[in-house]
Image 1: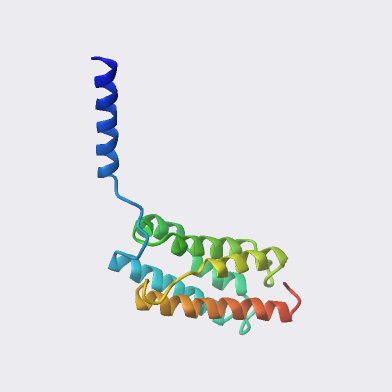
Image 2: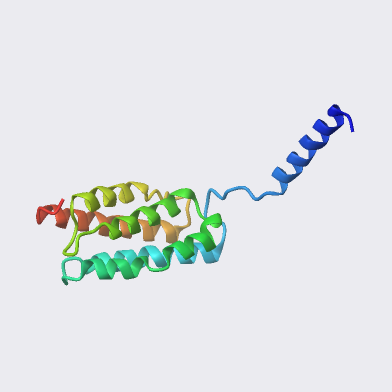
Amino acid sequence: MSVRRLTAFSLALAACSLAAAPAFAGSFDDAAATAAWVARADSFTHAMADYDANGDYKSNLSSACSGVTGDMMKYGQHEPMWAQTSFSEFCSSVNVMGRNGLNKVSCKSFKRALGDIKAESGKDPDEVVRAAQGWQAALSGMIDAAKAQHQC
């Protein structure tokens, strides 16, 4: 086989493999993925609602993060990047929390997670926008409460 034929064959094979590979999803394109994302965001919101109500903050938030990696692996191809990044950053923040609440490191990390939540009305499903807004409000409230307690 000549070099020219080998090159043409290699290029054709590469083009076919790229065409056959699924593109990375830039939006919620699966009902199960959307429902799972909404349920997880709502669980984060509910866990943060208890932030001032009881002393076991980290346990509530850790429970809400349980299984998030599996969800990301199962549904990640059907979600935009911000949806995955926000979950990952949030749960990483929970892991660096102090035993009795937020600390300087976790505050910075939670603030990054807050910035990663980028649901847009008209672009993302309505239920995702609603869940994201609730999660953002709860996360902002938790950060503000920690600031008031001089934890951030």
